[in-house]
Image: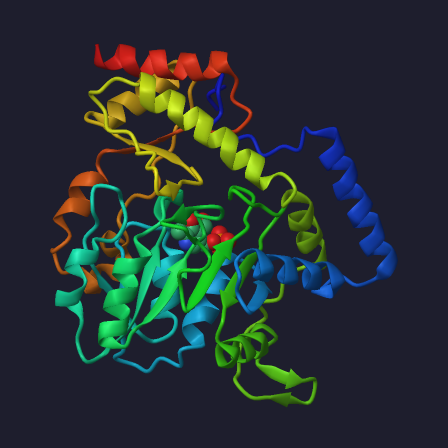
Length: 365
Ligand SMILES: Cc1ncc(COP(=O)(O)O)c(C=O)c1O
């Protein structure tokens, strides 16, 4: 394997205090003998609900679980349609199809998020919800989405897997959906040390149904009312997320500082994300749009810089979704060939950042 000078990500735990606190939590949990859900999860759910000003929060085994359960709460029927984006991790559309519904893909804008102006023409009598993604950590325009949802009586489901900490016009990601879903996998801005996710809602009916569905569909040990799988969060992951909550705002700030340096110093021959006054971007990824993407990626590899393409191919181009592909997503098709994610780890030092900038600029000069 190529040895990189700058890895895209380094998930090893190097901070001594954090490591010590993780171990203390683990010891406490071993002593308690409670490994599933438990008081660490209760405390996390309460904290997250309060932080996002939501009535209810449910911890799940992953972000994929969260999306699946969010749609399951809508009691979809075969033939129902869910409007969504073609550019996301495949979990977004898997959640739709696994609920017997049909994904209806709407093209994206240059900011990589669903194009709100193209949603209405895709709404039919079968449409039940819009499942939008705050891609890369750049949150969608909630007021435009909610106007459409209200006009057509649709539910808004927010895939906030990449956007913990993002804000758009004072609306926090995590507060945008009738049901909002986070992922806390180790790559995410607020991570666990394994798999974890969360659901937020203000709707009691959804909350109660999701809680039952999370635990194989049982209301208590003696009665299963909606057959389901096991979507519980481990106590240990909840404890790790509680610890990581202490650092998340600082991490987002550092990522924004790195993003500013990139934006100010990278060649104008590439397109960088924007930092906008009315928004806070969590910079889950720093995704640039470039010509000759594959050559640049290889060139950077030669310089010891690891980059990623997130996420290609587009969902409707993947085997399981080809039947939903309507050849009407030209912007997504153009953009996906140009996407490149460069490292935006909060531990990048000035020398690393300069080296990345100079390497990219040299490629285009
Ligand atoms: C946009 C998006 N949706 C859903 C998921 C699924 O989350 P998880 O990996 O926690 O299942 C991810 C995670 O990669 C994601 O980036």
